[in-house]
Length: 247
Image 1 (cartoon, rainbow, N blue to C red):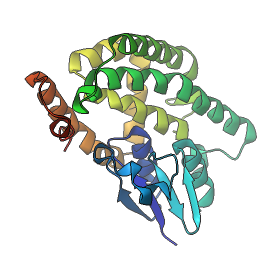
Image 2 (image 1 turned 45 degrees about the vertical axis):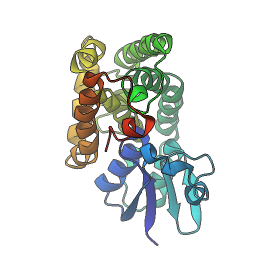
Image 3 (image 1 turned 120 degrees about the horizontal axis):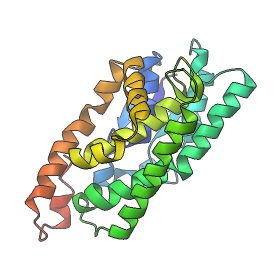
Image 4 (image 1 turned 180 degrees about the vertical axis):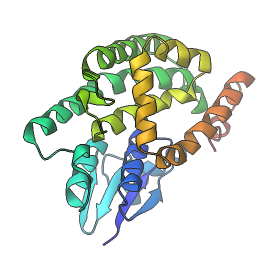
């Protein structure tokens, strides 16, 4: 039975799932669910994920959503997956779980608030909340400091001092890649003070090439379109036209 992955490559959790499958040679069918066309709200997709979010998978009769749960499942369900992705050692696995839990309430919370209230909001025809953007950047910066000072401990290249990447590395780096949508000066201001974080991002990219770059191609193209859209500064654009900004 072929694994089906419902994803939008504009979505950072979707990209993590796709990269994991490609790096580990998992045979799968990618089914595009275009968020900017609101396809995630279609009744057909909600039969897969009633929450109306990507990514989601179907594996035979089994359906699953939430990216971290999917990564855990894939690491365990398919033969030949290297142990470093989701170690069988209970202590190592538990520490990876702690990173994943921390991610949602810290790094992801800050990054999403910042990006949605700076670049993505206008592209969707939504009003920006400047206070939310400022608060999001504070949370994001604090999260980057915590990654640099705590999660990237020891001499290992990856989180938790590991010499090889785990599903936590992949999930968090894909989150940070969403900053590529922002103006380069802003991106440099946020990441600039964190040299260890920048090196870790590059190490994770290298460990998952060529698939990391291929899966992120759409994001890089979206950045150019978004920046062009924002530079026009036309506040009278209709909702339908703004939603074409990423297509």
